[in-house]
Length: 172
Image 1 (spheres, rainbow, N blue to C red):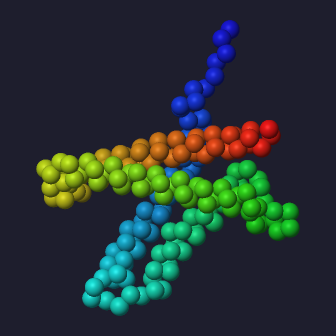
Image 2: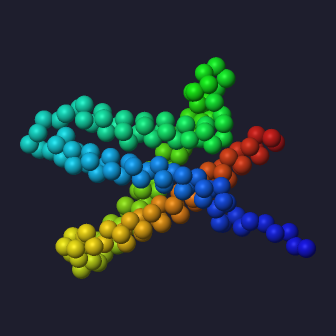
Image 3: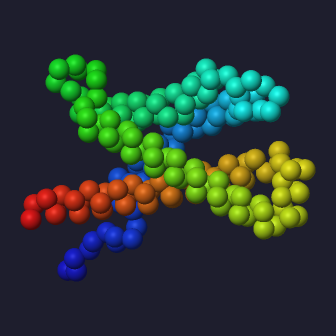
């Protein structure tokens, strides 16, 4: 019987699982960004004085909270807490949390880039989207979700390959 291997170009099931878990976590962040995104106009607007407390809130909400949550998700799924304090994730989980946050940011960046490229190339589409944007929300949400999950799965696969190559190079 032939040796049946999983193709290297297709993300492993663990990469798809991690991408889906990170997508489920990022869904609530959409509402936070939507709420605070309108506040950015107040912070950086020409008519108002910059309010640093709001910028700090955005920074904490969009950077530190996701890293902490991803670290705890990693600890919960793979059981890697520190021995000294049972509820605190270990260093590897914090690194995984930071890597997961970076993968989410890159995935959303790619989603945004693709949307901007499609909208700016087709003037009629961008006019239609601004005029009838509410009717496209379902289609747009599916598109963004699909691009995010596929991109995140490939980035998790890339992270896995980098880890494997580093561990192989350390052994030799």
